[in-house]
Image (cartoon, rainbow, N blue to C red):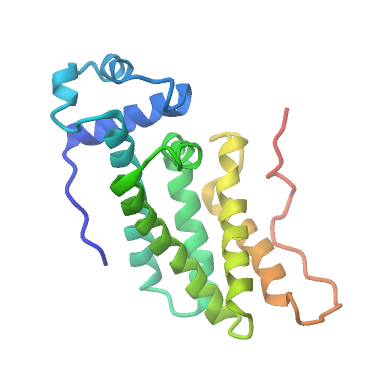
Length: 215
């Protein structure tokens, strides 16, 4: 398991508020002065923790991806069957997503804003996180070629990450319910794909159509 650098309480607060500012205004539109006003910290105080707006964006992404990777790795190490691992992963991912909506929105929208070493370092963590899922799917369906597993991996992430466009805490299902229903939907399709099984798939427990955005 990769080592995580410590983040003191003040930096954690800066990263949280900066993520909210970037999520609301957009990375390119927001300024460090906006962050200073939102955090009530002077510019010199902010620059103690980072040297540029790009480095601030990197710290947000590095911290978030590192945290969720560590949580998922620890949880998966305690689960044996690949199907249970998939369900566990989905629950960890969605729980983190729901609790960190601003950060996840920034990760989704500003993935290409980083350059050079910052982009490479975040990319390495992303690949490590993605590999967790692809390895689980490879054990679930060892008969499937790597290309199919890659397609299934990113299809799953697409389904999970899209919730930031419609999810309303307190109005939509809990992360636990989301994870149960989405895991069921994905596994039904993935486990039957290519098997020529023409039998109708069993219904997913508690499926109620509650995932669709409501006016």
